[in-house]
Length: 125
Image 1 (tube, rainbow, N blue to C red):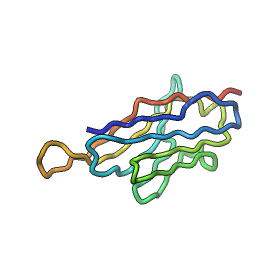
Image 2: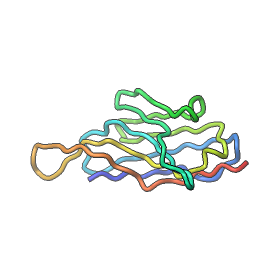
Image 3: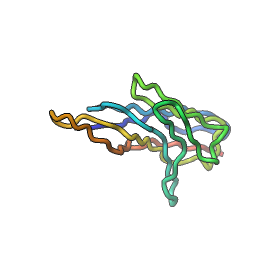
Image 4: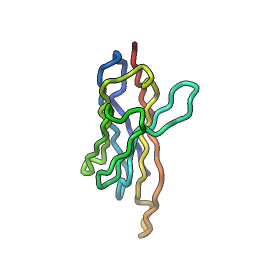
C-alpha cells in the first residue's frame, strides 16, 4: 500500500536546527494532508504541524515561529525545518499522511491514514 520513511533526526544542542524529511512511496494515487506528530517519553502523541495538498499549514502553539513545514508534491515528500530547538522538543517524530491509493485492479481508490516508523530528535541543554 503506502510506506512512509522519515529521516533527519539526531542529537543537537539547544538553539540548533534540524530538518526532517518524510518520503511516501507505494501504490499512491495522491497524498492529501500530511504532517508531523511527536511523542515524548511518558506523554501522548501530539500534532506538531500539518500541511494540505494546496499548501495550507497548521502548527502547534509550542512550535509556531520556530518550525516550518513544507512539501514537494512531485516527490510525495514533506519536510519539517526545526529552528531554535529547545530541550522540550525532544521526542520521537512521526510522519503521518492521508493518502488515496491504488488497490487491486478495480476503479475504486481507497483512502487511508498511514504512519512512518519515527525518528528520534534529542535536544541537549
